[in-house]
Length: 261
Image 1 (tube, rainbow, N blue to C red):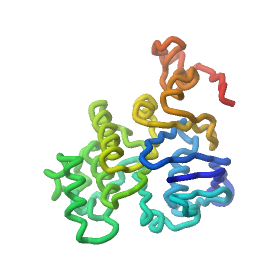
Image 2: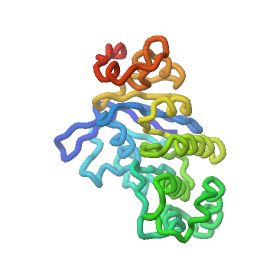
Image 3: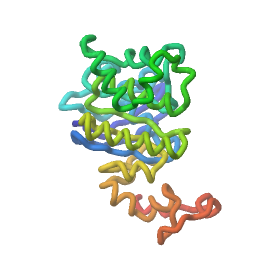
Image 4: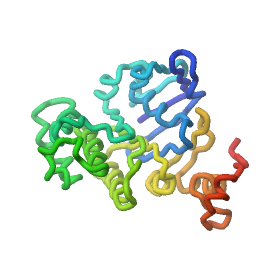
């Protein structure tokens, strides 16, 4: 479905962020992309969705194919029209529009499909149905996260790129959001590329995982295998050699052996 091959990304023609990144997603898969802040995860999503240009960035080498079509130099709205939708981190709602107006803003295609699409979103997020006339800026963080995911679904995407969907949410809401992502994948047949700091949750949900450091993929494999890797346990999950949770001091001063390099 999606094939990213050896892409390099520069911002302002000077700052190189991605250094030969390759990954792939098959139809119906959930793939997670892990890495520390600044590793290049969000840039990878923007390269796929065509949103680099808004930040004076561009793919300078390599290629990106979606369902057999080269898309690395297509405009964002063209890529969205093919079925690739990105949901940004930070819950970027249109604050002065109502919930329903926000959802309608995500629609692509025949306007006669809008009522059915709205109903699909409300079935997935029943709480939003009670808030249709409320301005989005007054919603809670959890409600806004439901809204931006719902807005993305209004285009009936084939591939959804989710950037930190659990950021800033309570543990209960995090559980709900991840349950919803699984439901979107299974019931809507939507493939998912997930960037997520909550590595434990992401690896439970995903079929396959990639780990990024400094603009490169340094490890990949089935999510279960990645989860069992000693370095992943220690650095990303905060667990010791035998599964015990490490103290903050231990994690802070832990020097990664980086067996993957």
